[in-house]
Image 1 (cartoon, rainbow, N blue to C red):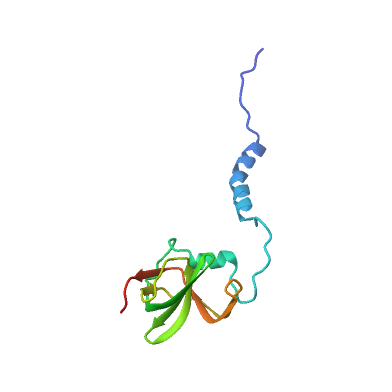
Image 2 (spheres, helix red, strand yellow):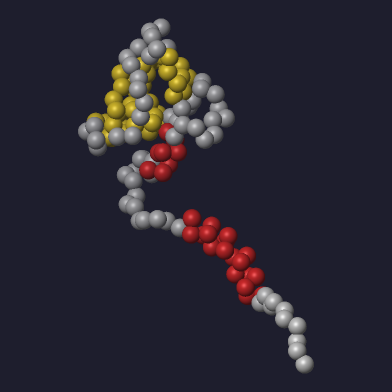
Length: 140
């Protein structure tokens, strides 16, 4: 007497298939390499890039406007001295081309007081890290 062939799927096999997406999610969340903590008051590299990375989710409009007085490029950042209604301050964003006298528009960002740049060997009284900067050529 012959028995018909049947494919048998063991519950463990089904459980393993269900846990693959969970395993993939856990691996994606695992830290890639150990990094030392940033200095006090300084955003982590990931947080800083999220602050300055243009694109993703710009639900807020560019609300602040000023004139570029000066700019300094340092690694991935461009520091821009902005004159807004007679008051000057520094903002930092993803590296970009900007000329003295350009009009700049940007959304409110995260301000860091007494920010020291090791690369520039300079302490800024305050720097606002912003993620979106729009420029228009020319003086006001």
